[in-house]
Length: 152
Image: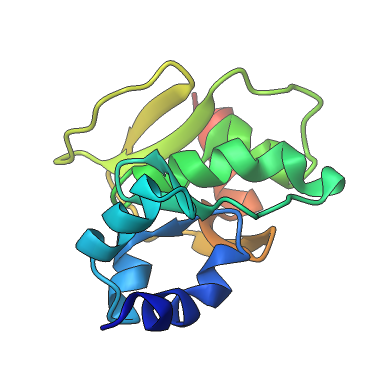
């Protein structure tokens, strides 16, 4: 695929806060192409497998969730949970110092400074998505998060 065709193929992804290499691959844009555009300064690599267009400008009101979106996208199979979920739902006054992300028991993950990993047995119960900045983010519903916090 020619380089100009590649940019046209991922144009919609470049307008989002972040996109994954897997999303680009679905558009037949491979990691070699992404690497080339990182070197030429047309996209930036936020984390392993997560990219952003260099011209992307986040609306000021959405700045609050950018870091959370990048974090949950960097955790394979991760789901926003507990304090982070309650903050999204505006149920708590607490501002989470870390992003609370649930993973299944068999998953091994490197913990970052702003990442709190929580292991859940049933990853499907109450799992839903919420639209943050035009990105569908996996999150647990209000009911499950309230019950989990009351049980702890």
